[in-house]
Image 1 (cartoon, rainbow, N blue to C red):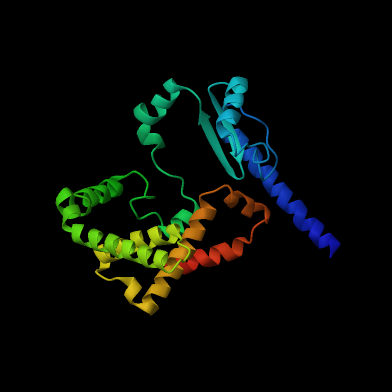
Image 2: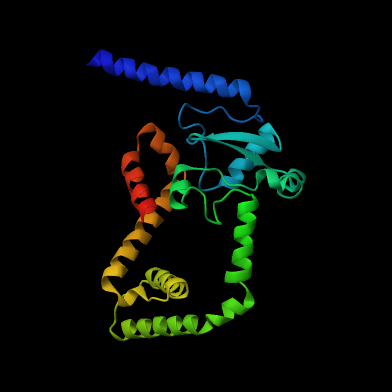
Length: 242
């Protein structure tokens, strides 16, 4: 048993080293601090004062440097001139988002306007949204729905105050946004449909949990087994099926 575990561990280490050697031969990155296997520079990152941390690194390595956060390599720009180069002159090169597993699952393999890469498809999606969904005439046509939902929200808050109940403004505002969106998109108030409301709330809760995980540094810890990756993937599969 011990020999089997040793063999598996040795195989994982060799695969990691071979992958790192291959990447080092094919990738040319700016200088940066040396990190550890798997977690990279995660142990050095100052999440409370990131601007100060990046400032110290820019003084040591220059106005452009690289970091390894978990499995992701990032390049940090610390110069107005270089920032203009990235955001204006070379913007088409850097405008697309990376295709992470969580984003691909939630967005149906990157087919929504938020996570789709810059392409003819994305430009067509943006055109549809601007012309048919977000035009002034279309937004004004849903004014009665917004006013009705805000009125309902104020009435609910007033009732809770009268009953001396604790008011959770986060849940109230999330419910307001959700209900307005559902009425505009589907013509239904899910608050009035108990069964549908439970399904919708469950889907929204699972999606928010996945967003919190995959849009934070925690995703990289999944690679070293500190978080139950299989449970996360199961929830993502549920979302994609719905």
